[in-house]
Image (tube, rainbow, N blue to C red):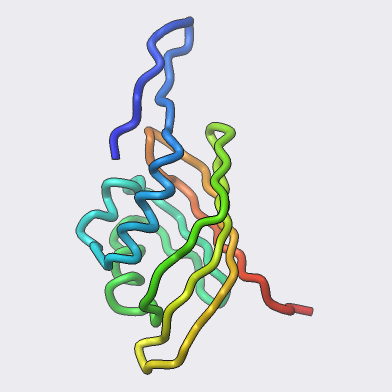
Length: 129
């Protein structure tokens, strides 16, 4: 997903559209792993509960292709942008690879760089303490 470029003023910068977050979840839900570079920076860091951070596009792609146990779809309830930051929240509905039903609320926060997601951190709504 291409970003538009703001060319006026002394500090031209890349403006990241809200649609990049929507596109991210389309890619995940369709399991279109070859499209991950369209939304993620090559030096991405993804923090997800229960895993060590995934660093770089190769590790992230490996996570999605071989490690992630979920299959289903995300229903986004909201997306906020405050560049270079963004956030979204919603619900995942699907199942594990073993067929166990999953319904999980989540929230993500993002840092963007060069028009792509440079850092992603996922939070789940579960008791932790």
